[in-house]
Length: 391
Image (tube, rainbow, N blue to C red; front, side, top):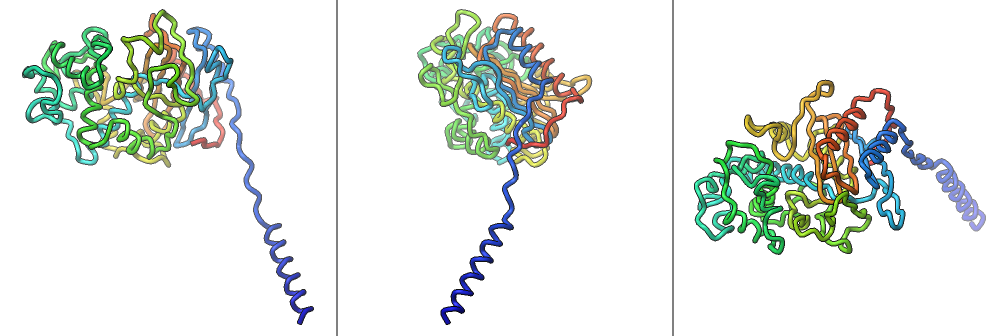
């Protein structure tokens, strides 16, 4: 009996050893290889516009095929920019806010034609102390999305920059309604408005029953796996983990300037992120294969369609008919110490680039150059991307 048990134990051991021997070895990790056609272009951009650091991410056909950082995240410590470095994305927040509004429309919690202010409005009489004008009570959600509310114009009479610095977000909205009359009838004239998107953040809160940040996190960021995207903070000592240092190219302080309160401007300019996370969002909303769909095709098409009098601006995104690429969507961002541009071609390709400095003087020139560079990369058929997915 003892010999039989010993033989049985030996056989069992041999079987287990055989199973362990036949076990498949894990596939070796595929490492991203450098692509000189991209890297050289990023180097040229840094040199031309004096950006200390740049980060880029490219998603193609549902896969994150390239993500790389260049230069320094902190000039004092010489810390390098990596794909995990976090940057202020400034006005790209409007794209995020636009997606959030359209998600509420998709879920039948909001209508684009809903009035915003007044007895029948989403926000009712919550803001301001004066009787609303007929123009204010005529504003709809769609007007705000397309920058046609009739006023609160960027760098002309926009309360986000012209309002008192010591006011809270809600106080600033009340101040703007009381003190900045609309210049034209809502729906008649396009004027880019940071204040309009600040109001959209409050509409999202009212329609969802959650804070703006909570709703965006649950309905957008968590759904696409964007784990490195957060609401921005003003102070240098309040930055997120892995967030870069910001360097102005003029006398404006990126952290203490009273005119630029990025924390207060949540829905209009207030997100920090990585290019990879932005690619996660864009590849999902633009229906790249294999990505979670945030919006159905009809609403996504509507999101990118301007009104007849809103220029090229849709609902939180610009539309551009490129002579070779066809229809592309894009949004830029500028804040003291940071600059960004993100471009996508529906269902196929998206690319996001961000810097830890910003060109306020000759901004149009810098953005045209950056856009041209991104379009070159998108059109460059000689670039061979690895069969790799870093999402």
